[in-house]
Image (cartoon, rainbow, N blue to C red; front, side, top):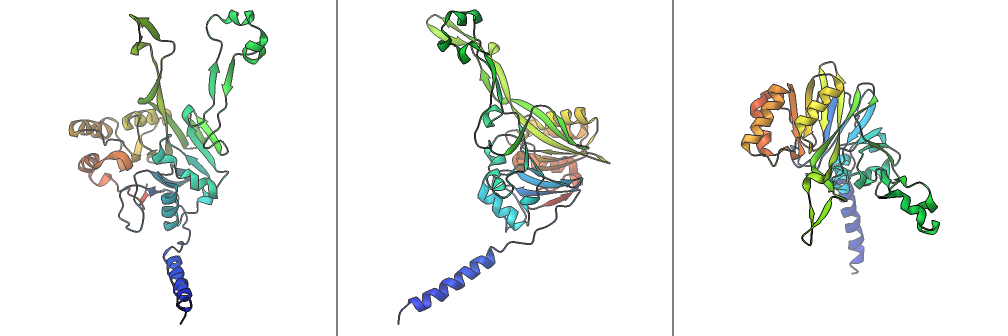
Length: 328
């Protein structure tokens, strides 16, 4: 007997079982006053895919806000599907910074919600417009050259370079300074010198046959980072992505910009590199000097800091793993 008569029904059964296992959950409503972790490396939910990266979603005054999008677009799609998140209903996106573990999920998001508003740090490496001055030294020299040898035929030598690239087609706004998105909702900007780059032109001198570079002459440009602050009756709810700029510095800047206390800090505190002494000093500062009432550490906070925050904060240290909903 021909085996194909058995093979076809078996394939149909296998496909049915596969589709049943991957069946989408009904879409859930994103509730006001709650934050849901969509992407992280720790979780109580074994059905979700853990990966190193970060993303969360919340709703504020009727607007659904996605903060970061994780490391991998396929995993981001899988987890949001499993959690019943309708990404077509996202009103705005905040990308904390230009590292892969916070933005690669945008590849999927932009497939389903191509016109969503995205706020991105003013980072030239990710397409922000760059002011450029091509005047150079001895500006009058250009007049001794034929126009065919002059920039723009002798016209302006200061201009903007409008880059194209990964997100050139998206609805991007590059944010330089802290700003209100809507009443009670602020983007907080900070910058890290540690993750920046050096621009050392023309700060080189020819000494004994070698070009040497004086560090003090270098202009350092830091890694820009965005955080999100939501005003509530009991203080600001501060969402941070990776805190490369120092979570304590983000807290201070938020207090300054909002003129309010910080009720909760949620997200990546970036304390993985810190030893016990450094971690203890920072946790003590957050709690006792900066008077942050509650914490919900996630992502790059690190195991040591998870434990020390629990020890310092007790019941005010809130669980924020992948798939967990936190009511603030």
